[in-house]
View 1 (tube, rainbow, N blue to C red):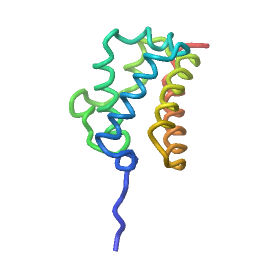
View 2: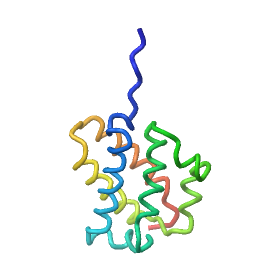
View 3: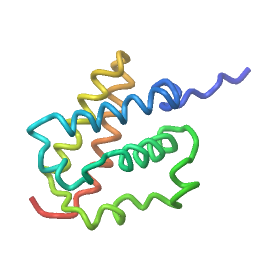
View 4: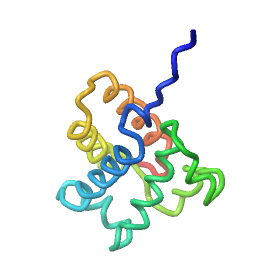
Length: 130
């Protein structure tokens, strides 16, 4: 008998869990003074960014491929080229995501796995020195 595969998407709580994570991430970006540089490269209204990140993470975490269905292949690095993503921006992004994960996830193993995966992706997004 095969065991059902449980994805990170499922472990986060599916659609509602991913939405909570994304909303908390952007709330933190909006609130934390130490993420001001990251916040200022985003639009005043974060709803579009929230929607896109939710759709991307849904597929990336093993749920529905909402982002690809609407926008095509994510091509994350290419799509972020117009924005100055340096080490400081990466670290600010990871600060918000790490705090959101800490608040949302009691499962330490899942939290560690996701933080590691996010760190790899965020590091790959760097397109400027510094």
